[in-house]
Amino acid sequence: MGGNELPDYDFEKHWNNAYQKTPIDGLGWYEEDPIPSMELISACNLPKDAQIFNAGVGAATLIELLLNKGYTNIIVNDISSAALTELKNNLTEHKHSQVQFIADDLTNPSELLKLKNVDLWHDRAVLHFFTTEKQQKVYFDLIRQAIKPTGFVILAEFNLEGAKKCSGLDIVNYNEEMLQERLGTDFKLLKSFNYTYTQPSGGLREYVYTLFQRTV
Ligand SMILES: C[S@@+](CC[C@H](N)C(=O)[O-])C[C@H]1O[C@@H](n2cnc3c(N)ncnc32)[C@H](O)[C@@H]1O
Picture 1: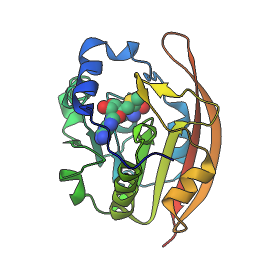
Picture 2: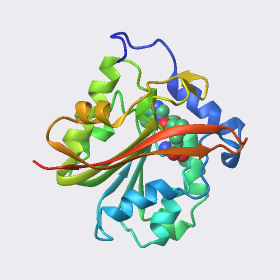
Picture 3: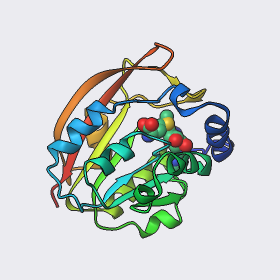
Picture 4: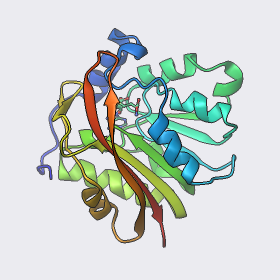
């Protein structure tokens, strides 16, 4: 899974371009109603003030939905400041004051190193872009540093039957066993399912959705 060299590529620029050149509801990962994520988040039975961290959030509609459901302690992150600006602009001022925005690289974190006591880590279509062993190690170390004991992790990535590229970039395909192996034995798999997502263009993308809980 992945080589050892970090690719010589400006990912921040890539993602800023993606968000600047296409309206969000035309992006290949735009989800009007994030049903599978909400199903897993509901299964966690978290209190409304639980600390929910969204890794590589983009301009996801999930955040407005969580705010509408009364969650008050949401942290969002992306490598792209353009994505975070778009997300902020799409929320009312009242709502975005309840969200903490962190522009940082999950594979080379600085501000994100302060994350602690996270009740739920949510990642849809982010980890699969980390193609090198080093990027993956930094990402999973960050999860372990941030998640509290008994905290939850949702990872939703292209599955083994899924596409090999997204946004023109190479990706790594996953199944639940691979995600379990990367998280390690301190995390227990609670739920997992495959899900076919329909893109705005009508294309189909095969995902695996997983919900883990930290047990130690
Ligand atoms: C395919 S999009 C998915 C966006 C969002 N999770 C969703 O479901 O709509 C991938 C997102 O990951 C972000 N991203 C990619 N690499 C990242 C990194 N190293 N650190 C933080 N965010 C990253 C991108 O900017 C983009 O918003």
